[in-house]
Amino acid sequence: MADTRKVAVLVGSLRRDSLNRKMARALARLAAPSLALEIVEIGELPLYNEDLEKPEPPPAWSRFRNEIRAADALLFVTPEYNRSVPAPLKNAIDVGSRPYGQSVWSRKPGAVVSVSPGALGAFGANHHLRQSMVFLDVPMLQQPEIYVGGAATLFDAEGNLTNEKTRELLEKFLGAFAGWSEVIVNRES
Ligand SMILES: Cc1cc2nc3c(=O)[nH]c(=O)nc-3n(C[C@H](O)[C@H](O)[C@H](O)COP(=O)(O)O)c2cc1C
Image (cartoon, rainbow, N blue to C red; front, side):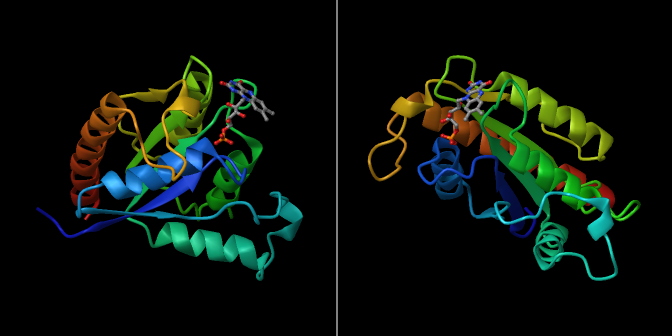
């Protein structure tokens, strides 16, 4: 088996008590040693504006781009806003995609876990995200799909997962993601 792969985790919610952030932390704890999951913050990124794309762009953009460049793989953990990707996450995707021809996303293996207190598990955001990632040349894990619904009941006060079936599904997902990351990273090297 290969070395530890560094996984940049992007959380689509900025909320302090975010269920998605709890999920991202739970995933980091569940992951095997071959995957090192680390959250890359997106809340401070100025809204994408091509006028700011100068030799010295906003420092937060440069920090973000460097952190994504340094990652071997990408994991998106996101809620759904109005059946789509929340604006902060879409903004981060746009920031990383530019300047034209210098996208930091290209050919990194990716996966998405979508999380909602509602019943549909943020299906709409999950698939809108996939649409952008196809264009950005990020090969996304296809199976198992992870739409986590009813998420408000899944964690205890400390943010630990309390639902055994969910834990099993996430472990299966992480195993598949580790395998997928190896396939893509080795294909690119
Ligand atoms: C602007 C806005 C739009 C929302 N739209 C949806 C939606 O389309 N589907 C859904 O399941 N939940 C929707 N919600 C509810 C979120 O799923 C809920 O607030 C969730 O807790 C957000 O994730 P978080 O806990 O990680 O912050 C919306 C919430 C907001 C604030």
